[in-house]
Length: 238
Image (tube, rainbow, N blue to C red; front, side, top):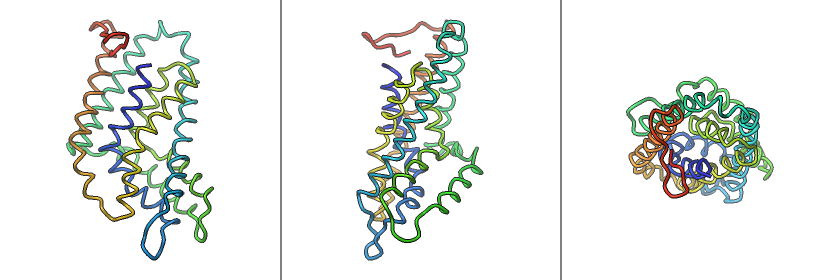
């Protein structure tokens, strides 16, 4: 159960700094077809369908990650050193993301800026030019879920360790739900042109991402037998 809880909080807390900066222009782009010319407002239904499509993609990606983890599950014991390595790699990626959110390092998305640019050009070509149908919003939301994103990739690595497609899908769905409060709030602020409040969350989000990084690093070291596992009641922290 611990990875499910971690994925929920990864989405909730990671979105405070990372998603706000990354997805503000995406929100502006995908809300363009439903923006009313008279006041610039976007309907709540359009935004809700965008997020529903995004969550659907996360769940489908979780199924794929869970299938991979399930296929590797019979070799769990022999792959324990590999699990430790994966945990340390995830810890390193979260640590880098914490530094990026705090402004101490370039955003991780610069590593695949070319793919992000191709994604943006493809989506612009698919935006409806006349009337905006609700199915357009859902489809665009599913494409939003495929946007190259370090936080999503980190969540998928963790979901794959859950060893079952349904648990992994549920974990990725919870991850997506965790991002909803911040991204839905960003949609509200974007509609009103108020984008200054997002900076207030960066330091807190960076600190929390760093704490997740330390937890995953300890989990990796414990898998290698270098530090003992630690439980809090029935909950294994690492």
